[in-house]
Amino acid sequence: MFSGLARWIGFLTMTASVLGAVALVAGFGLFVGNLPAEESTLNRKADGIVVLTGAASRIPDAIELLAAGHGQRLLITGVHQNTSAREIARLTPLYARVFACCVDLDRSALNTLGNAIEAKRWVTERGFHSLIVVTSSYHMPRAMVELERQLPDVALIPFPVISEKIKSEPWWASTGTTRLLFSEYLKYLFAVVRMRLDPDFAV
Image (cartoon, rainbow, N blue to C red):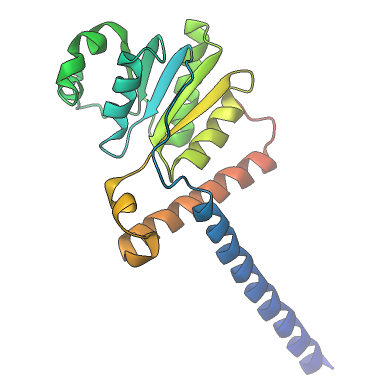
């Protein structure tokens, strides 16, 4: 009797594991399939722009949007404590004047949740009602769910930045890119689950 029950529990466990793995892989396929493959053209303006630090091209793209008049001010969130404003300004020397007048730096955020919390503080202080969000395409889903949680009454406009490596070759052709995307997918799932378990959380 007990051996039969054990076999039945083992079968159910194995079945659940297989179904879970299939669901995880299928979800990853949907996640990657929904990522933009090309840079988007932004035809809208917003009160402010926020860029989440990370990949090298995020900050220059955000400063170019600011210089083009797409927002009144730019928040660069997640700046390393040892990185000076001058070092960041060197990334876009043509826009030094715009950087000097209209860019704010946040050095306290250590992760995407921290980015969203600091963006909320900045938006609230400025009285902004719309925000352009600049980050890497693969990071955008997680950034948006975190920002939407913290800023439910603010219009968020995504501006995904696509890395040259992802542009130049299929993600499945590179082990490093596949690992990066799968890791981001797991972090996105964790963020979604965390929010469902604590639906009222917002700083």
